[in-house]
Image (cartoon, rainbow, N blue to C red; front, top):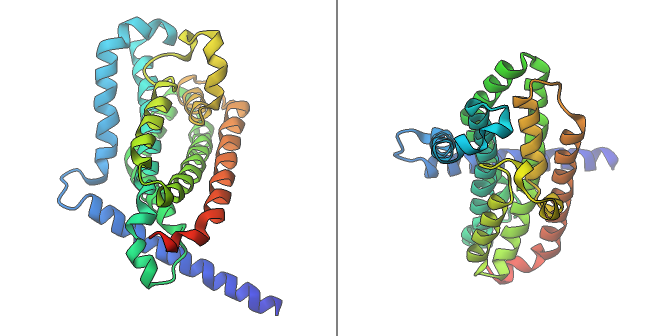
Length: 267
């Protein structure tokens, strides 16, 4: 009996991963059909925005980065790739369950696979577009393969945060169809409260304590410490980013499962 249960679980997991692969391939094909740059648009956007922020704020904030414009450029780029990944994956996932309602009414599928597939599609384009540039930047600054490998850890934290929030918002959208407008404001608030184009040091002490509520803060700070400082990876930063990821994934998964039984009545 135990062997049978194990076999069934293995078959179920195999079916889930095969279905996930098909959905990710479909998402990427639809998203970039006819596109010249394809997945590399995810790299072009932060590069262009980095140039804009550097032109406007580079001279003013370079003193916080060792009086180096180059360090400011790299700091802005790392912040932008994090917020862009978060915004793209969670916003696309928000619509995923509702958009596939007709399919879910015809075929019995694991519902959570749709938001997860959106995050996974963004992981794929991140891994072939942005990550190689981050890895090269880290290797040049730190001259250590340990830092390059450690770079993966805060990114895992980012993926966990995005997956948890994707599950949360995709479930909520089934019940509250005005959510996309509200969620745009939330993403904008997260963008402003993340030290992307400004250094965290300029934030007043009275406000800085509130920034710990931002799940992207430890991820950004950890990536910058690993990539730009030239020092060995800071375990506390990495731990905070992973802990944040685990917390949000647990919350999102629990919330999604608690509402999932009511989805079919509204799709």
